[in-house]
Length: 627
Image (cartoon, rainbow, N blue to C red):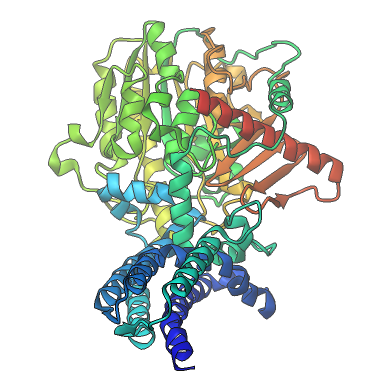
């Protein structure tokens, strides 16, 4: 009886260790729910409690991973015949992990606030490879509140460590065969907890999904397990993670989307060889311009340009971050949900870009950006796609580096104007703005104040708008202006200024697209095209106007051909959406469920729209694997 009690006491160490981590993960989850309480204010108490219950499988799996080291230590000492063992090392081991996990938790709070997704490998790569930009991105987060949450989690973790874990462990003197049997059993249980049971399918994020409210599902997913999983998945790019349909069916569906019965392109330009300037505007969501039902007065100059140019009012960004927006716009290549093409330079070099086509046609090419071009591997894309000149923050004087990101938009536009005045025509020039990015700072007066991030966001948008207007007014005095086509569009949408926090809502991806300039025929100035399209369609639409080769841009369609089908595809970390003139359906690839559907009553149409989106993602990801 004494030996049995001694054995149980020894084994109870594992129960205490597991209990410590389950309590810590529950506290992390509770803080997440409290921070985003507005999102579940109308949810029942039982459903909120379901977050903790449905999160257990991933919590147990993560705890089992953490337990590998102490488990092996226990097995080694017991089988060796040790009587006692000092667990000081385990106290230190646990405190180090508690400190790391606490930091990851508070980072996750801010990542979710800005991106609408949990902490993943992309955020870690962001921080490791471009720390200055990562700090700038989080500068708009509430510092004091973040530090308070961090201290609370660390204090709670350290307290649990002190109360639950013993300082020493006593091994009982059971027969070797019995100890061996128990050790095998312990290792087996730990393995099953890591795997999530004995089912054919191992544990995954979808096990935590249980609610129609996406935030509750995100809260249920263990933060650290999700990060570890995303890092492992990103390392395995040779497998199609979006295998929904037989590949032949998926390919056939995508092929049908790009079939036009004939080419009756509407030619809106009065020349076939204009200069072209593409302005990719940071976070310039549709909600900033009154032309797309946004508030009046935020971007008054852009609104006035819409009345003089050719405007596409149903355009959607292909993704929710700049790395996807730059590839989508300049290469006509769709976003890849959890993967990002810029993280794979060898694959990225295998896709075409419109800069290459302009270069082949005798254009001078240039790229202007006030930030660090190495951020998110932009530089690799730019330099591998026939840009003659790259002007980034490294080409500006130190006194011009007044923004946390680098140079403000006004400084960069002034530099571009100077460079274009000395450039041989025809030229193709690209500019990416950056001031309308977190932490939303302007060099002068904040038009809408600084009371919260929404007003700061509107102020930076107003500033960028005024800078573009100033650039155009000065460019009008130059000889090249009358022969220049200006294209304005956003890199992606944003949850501000209206606070659309759900990443799966199509409005988060709605962006403006404007063709502007004296090269537009007078009869088309002020014309609005209202067919659904994407920023990836800029490539084919632009090149078709100039009678350049569009064949390499297989994912881009000509929006000025009336017989082109109207649709757009967009995706976020592990979800995707498909929208046409009739319906929009967004789908969560983790929970395997529809998140948004604006035509719920038509089940047949919903099924068809969903299959179109799934076929699109499956096919583009397969091409990504084969690049």
